[in-house]
Length: 207
Image (cartoon, rainbow, N blue to C red):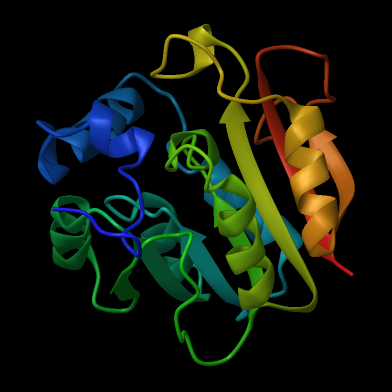
């Protein structure tokens, strides 16, 4: 049941209603078994944030990124609206604080963060129309000068959707409106130059 104060269902919820946390995590385990580095997002964040920094894994899912960053010595909070995913994340690490909340709602997460990361197509999979609110909430979690790092697909080939719900121009406009300034844009998590393709990693700084 929904009401005027209830967020609309996310695109993620519409796609993943039958997926368990263990099944989702197994996908990345399979990639790792084939030789794919499952920690590219965490490695990039570690290059951008000083050791021991406070990092928010926004839309953390089963906690792959936050768990790895905690292993590297970062102080991490994982935030997600999917209790099924968080239940699995809690079995992987007690070093990370796991918080159940919608990304479009600002919640009290204590001290500000030096970096917030939204990996795994988080932004395109939020509820339609809530993207500006999500970015405003993420801006609010950051310390002055803190970084928002987001990677997501821009076409159907890089998304679990039939089409991209928005483009980079719209994303940058939403970021700018809330006080986030674009610093870098790459085509991969290992820093390959932006090539205009179907996937982008964007780094914005809280002004």
